[in-house]
Image 1 (cartoon, one colour):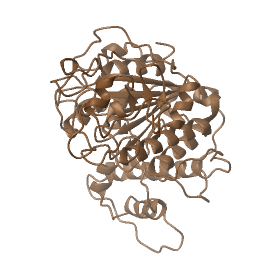
Image 2 (tube, rainbow, N blue to C red; image 1 turned 180 degrees about the vertical axis):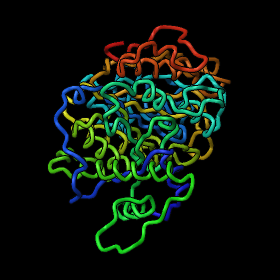
Image 3 (cartoon, helix red, strand yellow; image 1 turned 180 degrees about the horizontal axis):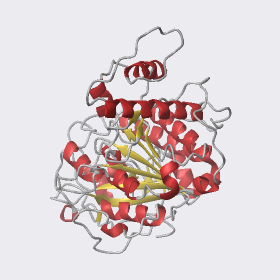
Image 4 (cartoon, rainbow, N blue to C red; image 1 turned 60 degrees about the horizontal axis):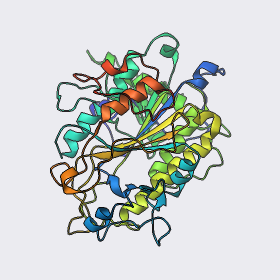
Length: 425
């Protein structure tokens, strides 16, 4: 990991903190008693597929002949054919690399949402990600993420004493978690050595025999030092959680970045320390070239995504998954027709996947209007029939139990009822 100065440190942690995923042998910050309230709190894990994931090669409209016509090189075949999709319904199937999620579909734990996205017309990754994660399409004055706003709004009562209500399983906070509420962000390499550097930088506890002289903090530095010291305190706490004997279950997580991220999140959830929100980015979905169909780059990535979520579900077990929701999203979709480079270009409407015990599974949600040119956005992209804020509002209302979630988002109120993909909606 490269050296950080104080400004780099605060920026990379979104003004909150860095943390480490795996190092054993560190003493606990404090003893934690079992708390049934914390154990039963709803958990939300947000996976963001950065780059604009292709929706119709994830949830595949295999019965529509237009799909194969527009994608002669990328199309995935019908269920039962070589390399064919995994049947969900008589119209749709999952990509054949997603066997883990297909098994969860059979258990009623998966709900795909079609033609969901932002009403804003941008095809810019940066703008689309900003608009979705701040949950304010076209509004550039909002600077706090939708998840951080929820954490701030509900930071009261017993929740004020929770050490780790939220964390990002990566070095840089996603936009959705940036804001007033301090959220822990997690570096991926040589974390222990880095943390020791930060302890020196922010005036942590001195090791015996140091022999150095204390210096008075420069004027105006107390706030930075305080934030850094709080960071170190939480670092040690998280490390203690992750080094507990038996913290890792028997589930076989992929040896991938996402597999490690979800394994760490599962360990924190099982520690029952009050975690409510976790997030992880899954980059690399901008497949302008060499996307592939049943095989190829996207197939490999979908296999990792599916296997990682399936392992996470197994690791937590049925009881914990009853209160755990995994929400998978991307900033926009791709063109319906393939391009000349075995890929697809920036589109409009996309898809989401909801996974977990709170899901009313076994059903596909969202309005589907087909792939004919007249039904497409600007004649080329999947349309947006479901504003992503309607999905977020249902998550906040039915899962996170936020009152009046329909007024939570700036300048927006739902035009219709909730989709009902969550059991308590």
